[in-house]
Length: 293
Image (cartoon, rainbow, N blue to C red; front, side):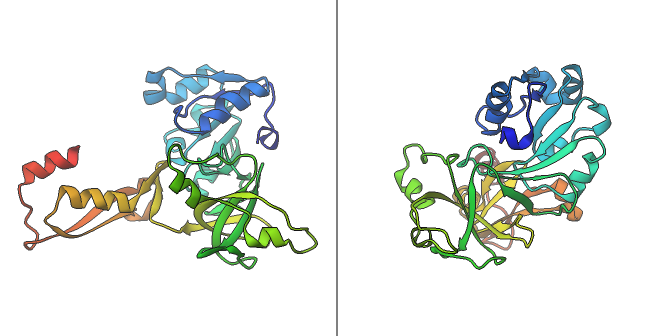
């Protein structure tokens, strides 16, 4: 991805991501491989004065989630030349806000496919959901209910990712690994369209996507109850499970990401509960304590 991005020895890359987030590999390892400089802000600057840190260190490359990028005024970081947005959905408004100041790259890639597998460069023709074309990988769209069947071109299906960027699996979880990483789907073994059959290992992303007429991939939705909120994966089903554990008197519960006033920038996780006695909570003090943990 360094070659695709155009990284050079002149790169001064902001090291913002936590070490538990695979984006830090781009910020640190890729930058060093190309002879660039890794710019590491202090923890206090990272939390409360990121713009000044970027300006003081003359950072010209940064990889941020849209949520973090919205906290920066483009005019306050004049040294920044390339901004990679990823980790959560990128809106047209996010791109337009920065387009006069920097080169915009919209990057997509699950943590299981380090660091990323597709990208879209610039804002011309950009719209929400556009994740671009493959980088260091091959992306396939298959029937969401049967990965042994390719989805017709242009139709929505589950996105499968193939290539050297795939993880070996989930640590100490062979069952989850077997479900998410598959070998040799039928259509790959058979070949077609002038291409001979071959073997291959792929990651089932759980993301629903489709190929647009221009060859770019469009993200449509999740196949399951997973959502992205401020760059973090959230399993809605797991949140609902813990709510039921904490509040057993709730007859029904539902968790959703809501957008007050329709603004994606203010997306919030909300829980809706139906209590068993017409809406009066029991032992609110105990519930407050359990929910806080």
